[in-house]
Length: 317
Image (cartoon, rainbow, N blue to C red; front, side, top):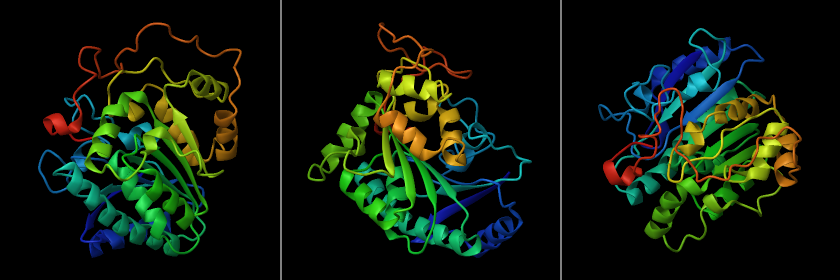
């Protein structure tokens, strides 16, 4: 895979050097190869040593000492020598939650320009978007401003955004298909966002029931939804943690679902039908009766998996 780090800078994405590298990569990309854009969330900064997403979740080789450092490109099925293309989109997400929320809107404008460049250089090619936390606001802001045809598949993980901007994003890009992944483990962060902007209405953590057929909400706490996913060949671990802002990408099995959605291997209409009208699957995992446990994964331990939210200890999301 070609992995290109492109950062937002004063309303623009990238530099002349990254523009040239992107154009060359798009020209060489096989017609059936995936194209992926990954967007980090709160507390990261491409310009602050030790806080760069390009050394963390958006890297092939994140620092293994960080319990949250799960390589998104690797877990989305990419390999350094593969034929596909991934863009690690960085933006300034440091500072207070108020300032980061405002900066996310400016980063969305920069992302719009990047997506329009892709549409111009590679017309007709579907683009996969995966975003966490305030990165979802960046993604939805870009969708609201896009001009011209572009087919998008998006996965929003623990989205730090409100329903109003999300609806405007869908209206701006009617060909976008969006999976909104929520969980009770993120409720403290949702409450913090509503406390910062109390007149903005419900957050996407409560879903977007009025969105229509190009949007589907997936609650990781809904046993029927997890049963339905199991019936589609996507087994996600349960139960989940009680408090974890990063649950939507640390939960074992979750990246298999994201790979299938973003690549089109699992058609969006089939996924939406299964989640909107879930039916029990004969081989589904039994529903857990015990209290939710902490996330466990190869580099996580039950004693360290549940940690304070980013605002508590300046931990990037």
